[in-house]
Amino acid sequence: MQVLDLLKVQELDDYLKNVKGNDRTSQGVRLLESEKAFGDKLFTTSYEQIPLLNQQLSNQIQQLPKSETNKIPDYLRKLPQGAVLVYPLILGDRLELIVFSANTLPINRTVPIKQAALERLIQNFRLDIRDSSSLDVKASSKKLYNLLVKPIEVDLKQANATTIFYAPDSILRYIPLAALYDGKQWLAEKYRIDNLIAYSLFDPDSKLHANPSIFAGSFGNSLKGNSEFAPLPATISEVESIKSLFPNTTELTGRDFTDKNTKAKILGNTIIHFATHAQFQSGSPQDSFILFGDGSKVTISEIDKWNLTKADLVVLSACQTGLGSSSNGAEILGFGYQVQKAGG
Image 1 (cartoon, rainbow, N blue to C red):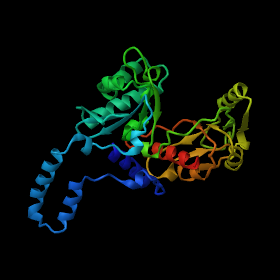
Image 2 (cartoon, rainbow, N blue to C red):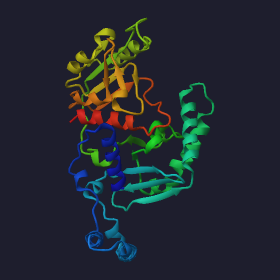
Image 3 (cartoon, rainbow, N blue to C red):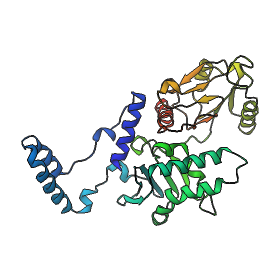
Image 4 (spheres, one colour):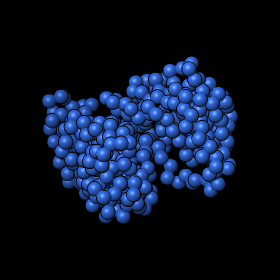
């Protein structure tokens, strides 16, 4: 699990080029003493002798107790009670599900399915969930439930799980785990589900503010007739509804909803809500952006310049932010990291 965590951090850095590690990621992966000795011998061993060394190393590791070979880093030992980490890993011929809860060793469940077949199921579910009139969404959702959740149902029960910390892999980033259906209930009805970038970058000790203050910005009827982006009149009523429920709301609408004004108004607010146009696309972080009412854009690369040190929640109510097809969802991972980074 620690290796998967570090791989996600590396994937982020490959995409954003600005990822800062922390004391957890800087530790790397702990090597066993026999592995360290093996590494030292490689410098003085001929190529022909390497297979023999590999066999010797394998024999030594197999003789070690599991408590040593599966030693858990301290930050993972502090996983809250009732919380379970679930890390899926998509491979060419199977899906691996790694599950971890406090005071246990990681559990691995293998689901035999070709990557191409899994991707087709994901695409079908995405089409169904975007169509509000679709009668097939429960069927396509249940197929994915049977792959992603059913194999670990017993593990979740034994852990007395109430919260799933979920770190999706690749194309799985485009579907909400909470919307999977077991035939009777949606997963959101059974568990609290928190999507993670990587648990090594997550702060389980952070506390929510008791009295939320809100910033809400809406695109409204901006740029009417002068842009490829259509007006969004419903975003005005969306923000007005928020303000009616939470009087402590600062709002910006239409042409007043600019990048500059937003940077000034979000300071000190605990909930940030954007109702606007946005586009998340695979490729460079400069290709994905949030649009403001005056036509200005902020790309994923620039989000970390915002001051979100007081923010508990950032909501992006916008279309075209999860429509990637053949990509690996790095833009979604990148947006989450940049928001987290702006929060300090």
